[in-house]
Length: 178
Image (cartoon, rainbow, N blue to C red; front, top):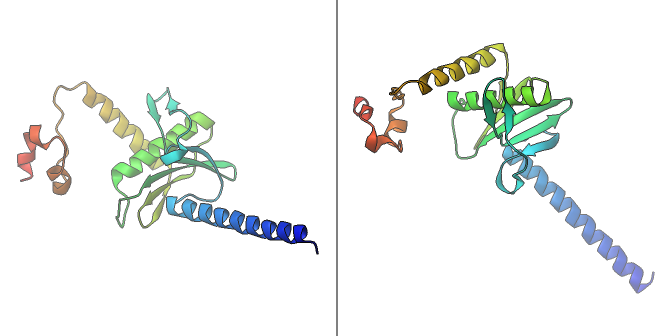
């Protein structure tokens, strides 16, 4: 074997090793992000920012999910909350994910069966069923009605959230929690 062949063989081995390490790192990154197997068709996180917001004119709704992944014939929205830890998903996060499911339905003409909500330590598979869809539409209608009001009472059900609210200095209602 000539010295050139040996160098080329070593170079091929090094390149193969580098390709494997890059592939392995990508697999770990996907797992940390809570992404299922499939093609990422939309991303709005970190260096992946691409695409315009999804828009559903019928509902007056727009948004930018963290990821959309084509898993088989289905497009699945994925919302990542990397610092959140909880044994159950927060209702607001579930509704945000449901809104992305509705946007996928409008944008791609097919309703996803579920969405994924990734917290720091676990991923929740949230079914996008008739009940969640109706809850989302009801909350959206309530929000539209609230826009017409001059003073809307804030939710103070969570004392910790109220205590760290950015509007606390201007809110007279926080005294209800203290």
